[in-house]
Length: 431
Image 1 (cartoon, rainbow, N blue to C red):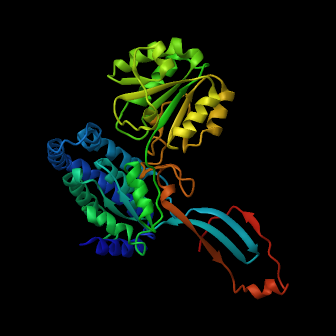
Image 2 (image 1 turned 90 degrees about the vertical axis):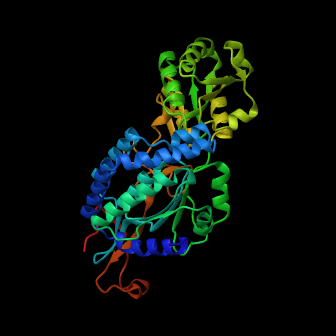
Image 3 (image 1 turned 180 degrees about the vertical axis):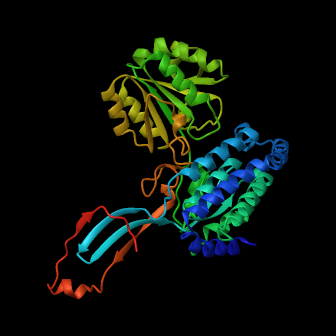
């Protein structure tokens, strides 16, 4: 099946999928979780083939880390599917109700977007997260993973397709694209694909946006910051920064730049350096940082770089305003955190930093759909329309207006026979 046929099949399935009962979707998710566990060995065997081939092709260390999909990661994904299954049905929720007249009511009701095209890099867990989120939200999905994960992606795709079909989900709702040409083909299929979600480099995301008429939702770089304020608890700050950088380095919510207030730097930086070096983190810093600790010099390019590796750039700042200015200039609008005991500064930071996720006294690694309670995520959005931050179920929904009348016509209101009431009430849509 070529990409055009796949997109048409997904579009056709999306019509019926939008109306599938919650019980059937949840049964399908349970079947998927069970089958993933039953076929752990098949998945691991396929993943080993991908890893060996990618190592032979000298794939970078961060991508190899993302590519690895062992038993632990598989069980983590299964837990995510189970959490997603237990969430409330997202489709058909009444967001607002307006009484236009006594016998004329208008409802704003959630519905699926339709067909989602997702283009992602080497993480096989993304395939499971994305497809199950689309299933729960009633959307068809076309998945284009990186060629480095092709064996793993094929096995996962077959598992999800077969398990969901057994549960009664319309055939064709999930499609797998595999070639580079398929990406170019997807971008032209605005008659069948309703939304593109790219997960990749900044250049790649820009390419997608510039070469398609389909709406694009996503983020490019994950240049995340921690700012350690003068009023920070040093032990807390060390724990938060170390976790933000090292808990898992090859992800977009890992901290890449640390900003430190000059008044706390002398006490904080030596302790932090010891903690980071225990995790084998390479540190670069500006001139003032290097006066405090022995590290390599940072360049202008470091403030713009997403390392996705054991490397951290540190800059010293004089105050909160300078920290906010640096983040808004060099950050990618993803996730930024402040460590301080001053509530007023925390409030200012969270109000003025222009990012989808702003944290106070906690690790940037919490910026995640599963950790937010969304079940999982299709990605992080730095857009300022439709969805922002971790995109879970709500980000894969739109809404439609449903009106119930009793023979009402506009002419009665235009001629003054009747008048609009426009009263907001709390009432769910029901026929």
